[in-house]
Image (cartoon, rainbow, N blue to C red; front, side):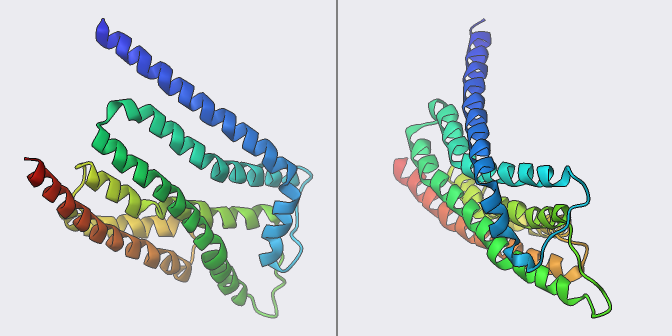
Length: 240
C-alpha cells in the first residue's frame, strides 16, 4: 500500500514536470511564430538563391518546423531544470552536486553542437553538394527539402555533442567506467558510423565529415571518463 502511494506520488510529480515543460514549449513555439519570418530570412542566406515551394501548404509546414525547432532549443534549459527537480529528492547530496555541475555543461554542449552543425558542417556539406552540379544542371531547391536537410544535420549533432558530458556524469555516479567504454569501442564506432550515415545525405563524403567529429567526441569521452573514474576511486578510498 505504501509503495503504491509512493508510486502515485512519483507519477504525479512527473506529470507536473511534463506539464511545465509542455507549457514552456508551447509559449516558445508561439514566440517562434512571431519571429518566424526573421528566422527564415536568416537561415536561407546560406542557400544564396530563392527557395521554391510546390504547394500552398508548404510554407505553413516550413513555419511550423522553424517555430518548433526554435521551441526545442529554447525549451531545453527548462526541460533540464524540470528533470533536475524530479530526480533531486531521490539522490544523495554528493550526487546532487555532481548533477548541478553537469546540467549547465550539457546545455552548453547542446548549443555548441547546434552551432557546429549550422556554421561549419551544414555550409561545408551544402557547398560540396552544390559543387557536384555541373553547368548543364539547373539547381533549384524546394524550401521543404532545404530545411529538412538543415535540421537533419544540426539537431542530431547538437544531441550527440552532449556525449562527453553525459558519459562524465554517468562515470561520476558509478554507472559507467572507462574499462566498459574501452571494451565497447568497436561497437561504439559501428553505432557512430550508422548514426553519421542516417543524419547525412546519401554520399560518402558527408558521412565522413560527420563521423570524424563523432569518433573524436567518443575518444574525448573515454579520456574524460578515465580522469573522473580515478577521482571517484580516490574519493571512495578517502571516505573509507
